[in-house]
Length: 230
Image 1 (cartoon, rainbow, N blue to C red):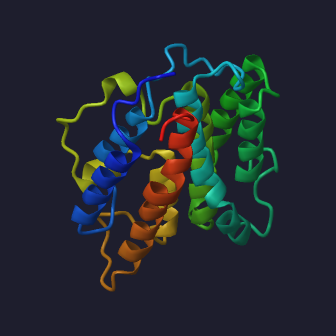
Image 2: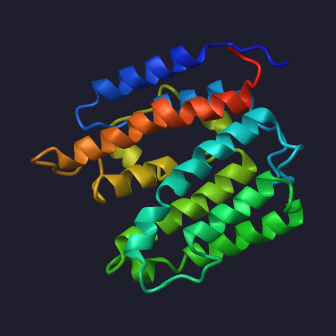
């Protein structure tokens, strides 16, 4: 059993403090990275191996973190895509189902690798829909990012390159289109943290998403990473 270097409560408290300090209700990249890394060591192979039981508990926990963010947005996608703009295999629900199968050990590494490549190619064509269907594109792109992150056990580019000293202002963070950032963007009415928000509606919605992420979703992932921890 892995030794727990910190506690769930400490991780949540630090993230809540960072969120409370934000004038726009945004959880920046650096405190998010601390949540991810607190779940345990990154998988040194990160090759999209069959999910169960080969991948580590920490890898499974981080995969669940991004997977459930996308799952939470499936009702929003269904409302936005009444015309069936994407093939069911490409739509977020199809991607979620495929990653569910991978985590359950029903999909091989080779099959998952082919799926990741197919989705990456598909995502390059989403731009033609963005002007008229921005919510569809945002959630579909989040699902693609989720598939890549979940199977390779990373969330941005490489966990070994996380840098606590970098400039972590809101404008910098706008470029970090991680899965959860994209879903927060949808929740906030397609508003970025740096965008004007005169009535505070976007801030309230963004804050609600991050509180759900910290208070409800993260404990589920912690229990996966540390199943015997108190």
